[in-house]
Image (cartoon, rainbow, N blue to C red; front, side):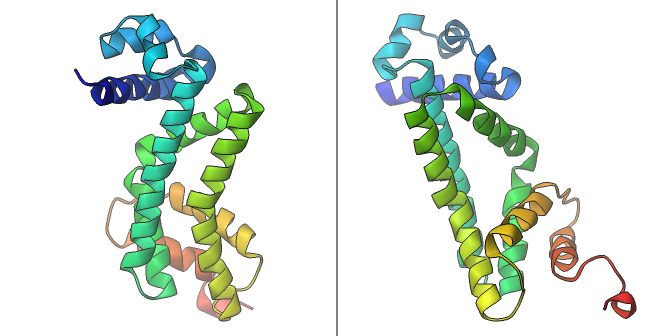
Length: 188
């Protein structure tokens, strides 16, 4: 087994435990056992132990999510198409990544201030800033009104909560976000 394989297996085992029991419940003995190595070998791959594993797993999650967001924004041309692509990208992994994302967030108060700052900064820059940019542009063009950060936050919460059981659900979510739930004749 190569070093890269072992690192990936350790990260996968850590991710599984993080999802299942959260950061405080993670057992490095269990992580090592799942990866098929002895616990002291973890420190060869991750000298900082649990916190280094957390950092690697969080960065991998952020990188993967950033790629989905970047792809979603790059494949669409209009504002509405980009929002729809973001809904699909969020919903694509909603069953697993939303709770996992929450576990990563919850762990921030349990790691060192330096790790907390690093992961928080990477998360904001990779996952939130591109969507804030989309809303900033839309506000400047007069497509929507409001604070771009508030719009991003509200939109991502709605998108992540979506149950996309059919193709048109993404468009319905964008319609709901942009136009509300009131019928056209009742809007003021």
